[in-house]
Image (cartoon, rainbow, N blue to C red; front, side, top):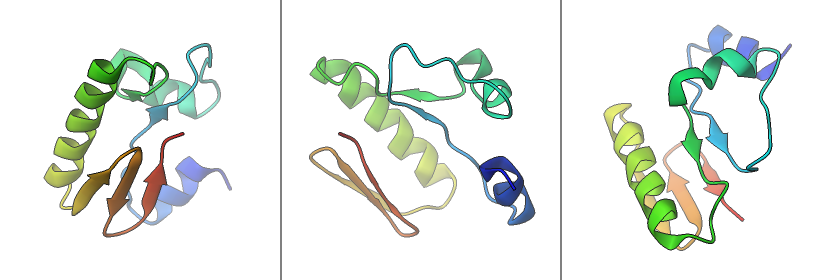
Length: 85
């Protein structure tokens, strides 16, 4: 069972994060990343871009009813912690 199938079976929303600049999503992940429906953290060397993406991600999580806060490069949510490195 893929991550997408598991999320669908649990009625969970997938929020794709791009971590590698040259990564080309395929298979089930490809359609999820069309039309910029992902958050791009592949250029973390640019602090402004990183902060903009993190703000967008936090706003979406808030809309989904997920309590989230940021500490450095870590994102802590009520369901999980996501570490961006």
